[in-house]
Image (cartoon, rainbow, N blue to C red):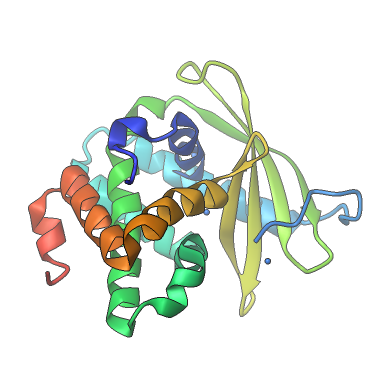
Length: 220
């Protein structure tokens, strides 16, 4: 059974706040090369844009959710992340199920975190380093701090280029991959009830955070 909204790990929320101020994993080893300035500039731009969303006191919940969906689509490899978090079940889905899952996943992520991030509008995000990995991916290390965060958090962003454009493919909070956390959560549902159980659970979660009108727009 998928964890309820209250059972979601706070580390996920903080990671997504930083997002707004997602083989994926290669250890941050000594084999890494020392420079990835373009990726660092990319992460700085993403966080600055997202903090503007956080600090817009006039934004309605619906507008905040739409702004977040736009940021996700623009700066995250959400299709790749979606395929990864369901693992081998991706190839077992019909085409219609794949399309429905990707839509639900993206809208749930945006809806869930857009309702929980306003309290973190006082954070700051600073880049502390960047490295280029041998396979061409880039890791940008940041720290987030502020009155709403008990202690500074180390967050690393894994960036991959698609046709030259940088996209975030993982967020690693204090050494914990958020993509792997989500994969474990989804696979617990998939292993117990299969694809239909996951789709139903995501549908219910989307209704919980965004209302029935959003879910109805998915055509089921």
